[in-house]
Length: 121
Length: 136
Image (cartoon, rainbow over all chains, first blue to last red; front, side):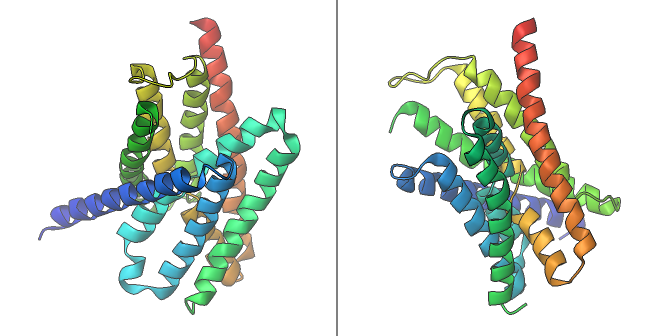
């Protein structure tokens, strides 16, 4: 297989992984979104995805394949959705916006570090 | 499930796939050129476009509870879905987490600035949409 073919196959794998990650985000949103507000669901998704990437990269091997890290977990989490939540609440609920601004990045960082540590990095 | 919810869900899934491919291409290009910034190269533009699309969507009016959503709704859903896929929180957390564990505390500045720039970009997108709607 040429480098070009290999690159296209990798991009396809990343894309399919992204679809899977997006689907997981939709399923979680649809199932938990009836009892929790959307911003809570999105924050939980981002924290869970950050933990999972820590575990995946920490374990290495096929778990750290780009279809998983860049694809599935990259597609599962979203920065732009979180940014819209923060900005959206800035006017109507500034304390909530501040909470999202400070708590979510810290929680995601902590979750990722926890995942890396759990995987024995 | 309403048609609008189904369309939104499909757009999130497909957008995540397309966005992930774009993200891989951008990050590879950034890495090959030795540029700093990490995930900011995707999070900032994605947040700007998402802010723009979200504010423009507000001008489309409420989504009908029944029946097929309009073309405008589908376009906005597709754009927001792609922005969701293009941007990433997990890789951002990974960059910062590895820097923290490696005691490369100076390398935490880049993700931190990236977060602030991303939020600023979202505000910028919202503002540009307001301007566009006023002008058009």
